[in-house]
Amino acid sequence: MPRIMEEEITDNVGRSQPPVVIDGRNVAGSAIQESKGWAWDRVTTIANYHLNNGSETVIAVIPCWEKELKKSLLGLGVEVVPFQINNDNEIDDRIILGLASTNNGYIITNDASMPKHLDRGLIDREWFANSNIGFQFVEDKYIPNFPSSWIYECRHKSSSLMETEVRI
Image 1 (cartoon, rainbow, N blue to C red):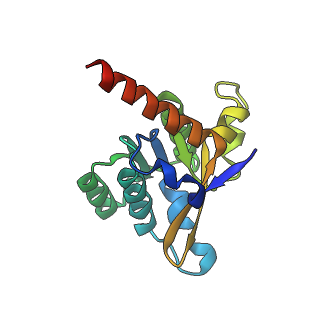
Image 2: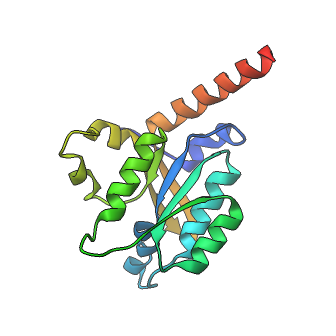
């Protein structure tokens, strides 16, 4: 599946973008690999990026104990879905998949094991591959790795909005 890096989407700035669902635990945990510990500010960085680039709906799935992060995200206009891990260490993955599916949105995660939750056939693997935005941080800068469907979706939403505006 072809992927599109941030530099290739500069023509989409200011256009309406699809909803995004942020895998908060995966995003914050990505700093652990760099020996930085949990970096919850990365969730805010990603939310800001997508809000500033035209996503009208940004949803962050975060642990319920991250109260300061929740407050910060709500202040930005991000929809926050807190979760609590009891006996199910992967409850957030299923919440994220459900939210992205019902909102016709994209999932921001590098979680390679998330597709295992698709085995029941409610959502197919092709949908996940087309709806997953991978990412990296370089010197604390968020660099999304968009699926090729992202550009199509952005252009489609923008042309639909423009047609609506002309009719009014």
